[in-house]
Amino acid sequence: MTSLTHLIPAAQSVTTRGDETFVLDEDTTLTASPGLGGEERWLRMTLQAATGLPLREGVPGPRGGAADNSIGLHHDPSLPSEGYRITIRDNRTLIGSADTAGAFWGAQTLRQLLGPDAHRRALLRPTRWELPEAEIRDRPRFRWRGLLLDVARHFMPKDGVLRYLDLMAAHKLNVLHLHLTDDQGWRVEIKRHPKLTGIASWRPRTKRGHRASPLWVETPHGGYYTQDDIREIVAYAADRHITVVPEIDVPGHSQAAIAAYPELGNTDVIDTTALTVWDTWGISPNVLAPGDTTLRFYEGVFEEILDLFPSEFIHVGGDECAKDQWRRSPSAQARIKDLGLAGEDGLQSWFIGHFDRWLSARGRRLIGWDEILEGGPAPGAAVSSWRGRAGGIAAARAGHDVVMCPEQQVYLDHRQAEGDDEPVPIGYVRTLEDVYRFEPVPPELTAEQARHVLGTQANVWTEAMEDQARVDYQTFPRLAAFAEVAWSALAAPGERDFVDFERRMTVHYARLDALGVGYRPPDGPKPWQKRPGVLGRPLDGPPPPG
Ligand code: ACM
Image (cartoon, rainbow, N blue to C red; front, side):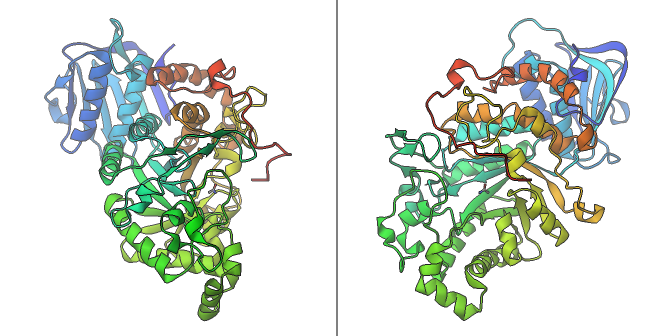
């Protein structure tokens, strides 16, 4: 078994050069061209821990090349953005890249080449660390290779988020979409609105399983990231060439915020002072009032968000906004009339449009779920296409950038096999192979329109995942298949070689073991991963077409 033939995600090309190997030892050095110090540090720290080797700083060889018995990171402007070339021969290893991200992804590949134990944080036993002579050329297919973590339904403590950033980096994923707010909780400290964390960050009890389940966990659930926690997450991500895109979901999915600040709700329809942070799942009817109080409040929220997150894109949600309260609200109806809007849908579009302009004026770009298309978003706005691919197709045709994340394919809360043992059978079955065969670029798009597909994203909604073990189980191994979809430009979708992917997975499972990931085993859940008695969503018929 050689790791060279077991890379995940697969590299663009791997050329072997005979049977020689480069053996790392106490004298092996690590060097980097100016500007690649961060990537050199990551590689040294990671490999020192796993191998016990010192990997001292070396002196670059002639013409910037690697000296004997060295690993060198060097700048090669001929290579594509985020791409790298690894050359292992004559007792040295060179990782060339045009940018720092390419050097980092090359370092990730180098770790895979050293074997699964290179993914541990301490040396287990005497090991011969060797690299096969070879040349590897690689580059990503998409520039947006995302994972959404829903930390609102169930809070993931900061350490868990840092761990997921490491797991994303190991799979060459580069966008963490943090779903920070929802009906069931608000997870980011906003200094000017302290009740968002004082009140909206916790609920006294939680529904276990689907909303129809009779099971309740009668203990408080909550938590939030302080602004320093967020700065740490963003910096840790940046060191790993990952951008954190924050989502503040408006105008729906906002009951927790209204519970903390009742003036944000439709006070002329219901008594919003009676609202609490929601303790069950679904689409809450309690949405933001489309008035000036709400706009000013959220401008304040977004001001602090922009200070914390350098991301070009800021996600404003925009999905699943129930319109019943707006239909019944005299003030919402008056606003529709005053502004000449096309009913409640026009009102939602006006609301999102406000933040579209507000963000553009501050040099950022709005991204929202595909519902934002319904009123025609501003020119710079981008769309997360979740209700199938139709929204993405319409958006790309209209010249908007798109991230493809259709629920039919890449919602990892959906169960991954048939059978009563599968824990919390939410939604329909999407196997490892189904995810592997997902094609983010719809064939309906012309080449010009397809350029608007920035990439793709797997979404992990956590209604039925209350802790890290549950999140690991749903996310892995399917995130490995997704990473190959997002990174590797190997073959047309129909030609993807799942048998070869499964063969490479045999080694990748050992990497996941070394990384401490509680994935779903290929032959089904372990006894403690099953959840007998917890009700999932009833499975009625095939999934909607995607
Ligand atoms: C979504 O799944 N409501 C974006």
